[in-house]
Image (cartoon, rainbow, N blue to C red; front, side):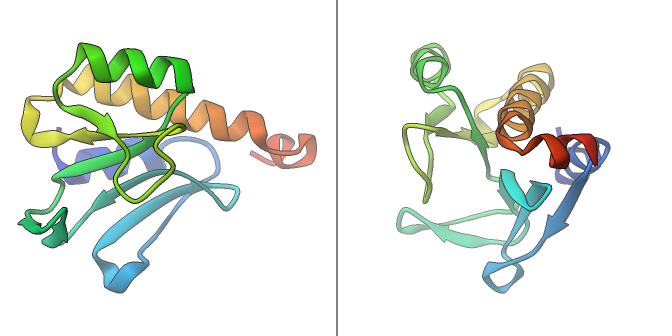
Length: 124
């Protein structure tokens, strides 16, 4: 998967908007103002080294599933710069299958939507 494809995929979900904080180095994908995905769109410093655009995606994840995914996939780690219990980092250079990226993106989106108020969910 490429960066533009990931952004298009996220934006195709109901109620999703993109935001570019942190000097425009990353894009935050939010539903009803709540973050469910983040990826770098510019070269940035990550854990002491410079990484190219779309090096990683941070996604919210059920804590038990997060642990299992980290054991099953070399390219899935505890989240960079986010709560490591509830978020995973997918390293895109680790041959991350598109189907898995989409599945985990939907899982993240669904977790955030479930946390919204009834009124917010109805507005999607």
